[in-house]
Length: 102
Image 1: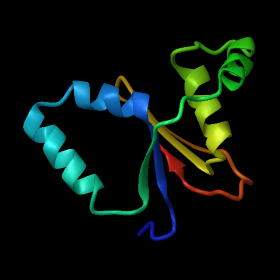
Image 2: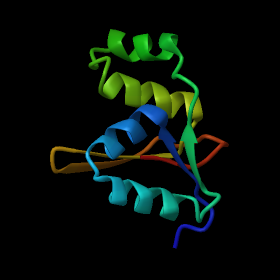
Image 3: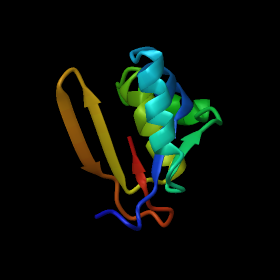
């Protein structure tokens, strides 16, 4: 279905996701993720200057500004985000790197 897309997730997001799972669910999650080469946890910190760029535009630093900065930094084409029951799928468009940020 999505054969050519890679999935990028910042380390901070993985920490938040796994914090809400029991240990067996964490093990299952990583077993599934290790089965594909298209999933990558980005360990490097998001450049502070990019986060501040989005803060200057009025976004919250620990939320949307971080997400926007990460998507720009990694040049993702699509952004999928879910918070409090809402799922947002957006097209960042026009980048060469391709991929999805969750």
